[in-house]
Image 1 (spheres, rainbow, N blue to C red):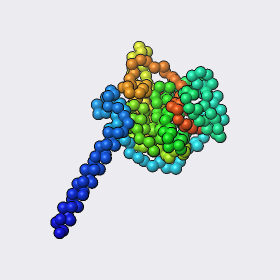
Image 2: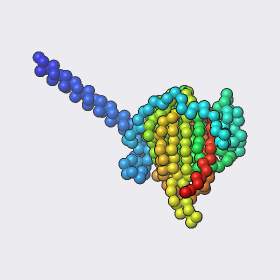
Image 3: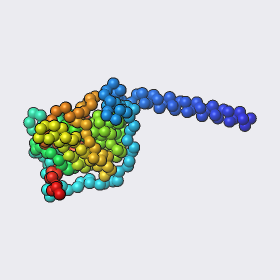
Image 4: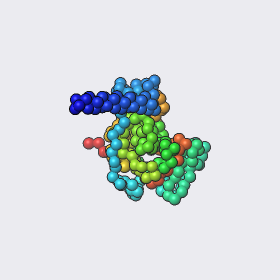
Length: 270
């Protein structure tokens, strides 16, 4: 009788394990993404590969630089009152300003800073929409061409190089440090522009270090080139030494506040 019970239990375990494997296989097959896109330089993953491992979840502390006042030498790009430092493709920035934050006006277009920057420290605070049908898709474009993704990665699933904190189509974050929709979050970014020499020969890629909510998610990460969808980014043409900071309108209602930037000056060389 004991042998029969063990046999039945073993059969149930095998059946359950088989079912679980089938479910996991089905989930993997149904994840959004592409396998007909170019391979990334590592040779392991396609751009937007659905099988690329998701970053581990790390719960951030309640606050890190949230609400941080701008340093004395910073340029305050948004203080909660107006969009005077920003413009859209057709002139004045068309987004809405309420109660100390700006909010995307869906399908009105990206906005970008009037001023252009080279190497800098950037602080951005953002909040994802609470509506579960709104994935909160947006992004911060460094020099106007490299997208640091904003996305509700807490409730929505997307390929690893498209989650919140990823450099879109290139590098997933080291950790998923997202907060719940409706909570304010921070990006603290150190950006170094790509370099070309006097003969217009490519010297090195753009390099970025990013903290999200106080968690390091990119450390001296070289970027493959300007962001694109379903493409392998590259530096096939020389980029200007400076460019605007842009915020993406992807049709979702994402909020931003407390945005400031500090230019990084060249250090004296020994």
